[in-house]
Length: 195
Image 1 (spheres, rainbow, N blue to C red):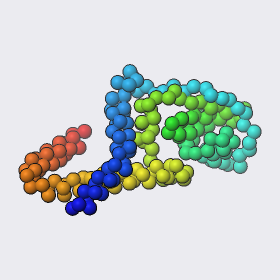
Image 2: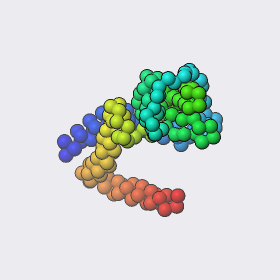
Image 3: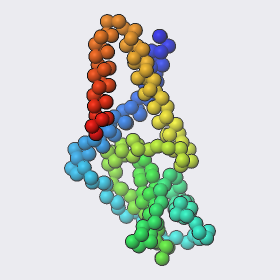
Image 4: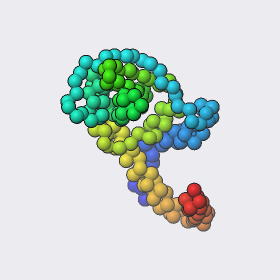
């Protein structure tokens, strides 16, 4: 049982920044109006630079291939999403940086590239950190973050399981602990059924 307590303790200390980040980001998402005054308001995009793209794409290149080439040309390699905008045929690239996200718009008709950034807000940063996930990007920083998120998930499951084991070892708290465990499970089941 001593080993279980040590693992419970040290895993918690190591992953405390992620626990804090998930707690604060959930507050920011659940109470967005407290911080922005408007729950649907996103930070505005502001012009950073304009360029004329001189590169050439291979025939039939997908939006992702074209976006990757444009970002490499700009020196902005990293995780991104890309889509064609139907109304004017522009390629919209969202460069997904945690601290400094960027939107790059490429207009094929004149090879114009517009780079925009967002006003920095702590709440927006926390939301981006909260939503960061997945191994599909292939960049080292993204892979490391995804691995740490998996470790955090594993530790959360361990905390729940070890918490029950540690509670069961303390005979004086069994009845009260059982009442709390059943109450929490019932409340969760109620909301899962009605929401």
